[in-house]
Length: 124
Image (cartoon, rainbow, N blue to C red; front, side):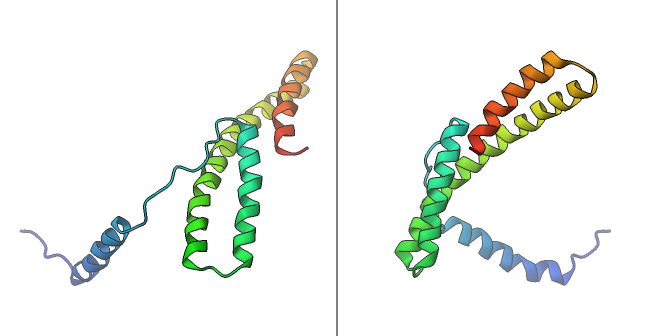
């Protein structure tokens, strides 16, 4: 015999349907500026953070909100690339760490230089 569904499930159904309709009613989405390299991602991240900060100081009119909406796509693209690259960077640093513990000077030099090349893109 099937157990009846709880009343709370039925009361939650209109909320779920409303959320679905609201998601469908969202404005058109933008692609944002690409972040194909770490250098490009960091540049976009810096520029678009500045733009966001400027918008947040002013009145958040519908036009300003639309501009915020558009620029967040570029920020998301930049963060995705930065996250991807820093995950790899963490692995490279771990290679330097292990090589320093195990007395492998050439590995420390090679992987250390690779680490610095990427890390210097993030901080100058």
